[in-house]
Image 1: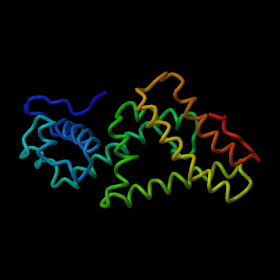
Image 2 (image 1 turned 90 degrees about the vertical axis):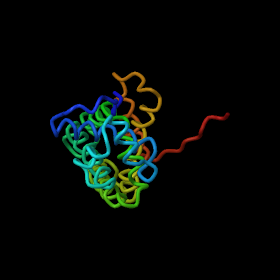
Image 3 (image 1 turned 60 degrees about the vertical axis):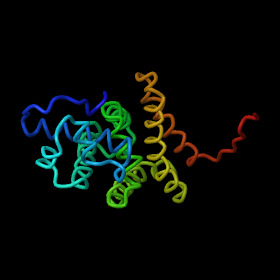
Image 4 (image 1 turned 120 degrees about the vertical axis):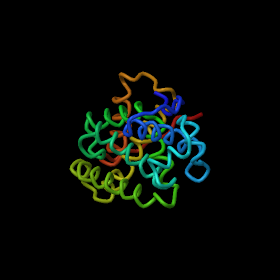
Length: 202
């Protein structure tokens, strides 16, 4: 689903207009980044005037924060438990949120951490995710250092697997959850077992 479709600036209920602006801003920020995206560009993409945009948001920072809040709310609606739990439901929820708003998912997990004004919030989100993963993984990985390694890597692997799935055009959606879970289990297995692997020769 592509967000931010233009439409005439007809009179809309306030909540609907706000959602229209947030959808357009999500696409614009994900495409160009925070610094390179102007409010005029977002207003144009939303099919409204800058005056109307300012009736809803005081600044570009305020708007970017609202975009992140919107994606976090969407993620929470799909993932009831912490993402780091990596249950079937949590992985399926990640995929559902990503499919519902690819730009929002990329913005939250790829772009926002590079924006100085929002880095602290995203780093806290990642720390919470790592802590949730560690609580589960430490039950399977007896070595404390390897458990910490896997807990830090597994959420990154899951999120990057979802983003790669988006980039590939969302192939085989019915089995996408199983594929992401296999990626996560690969990390946990690597930490839990004494493995010696040799990559295939080119």
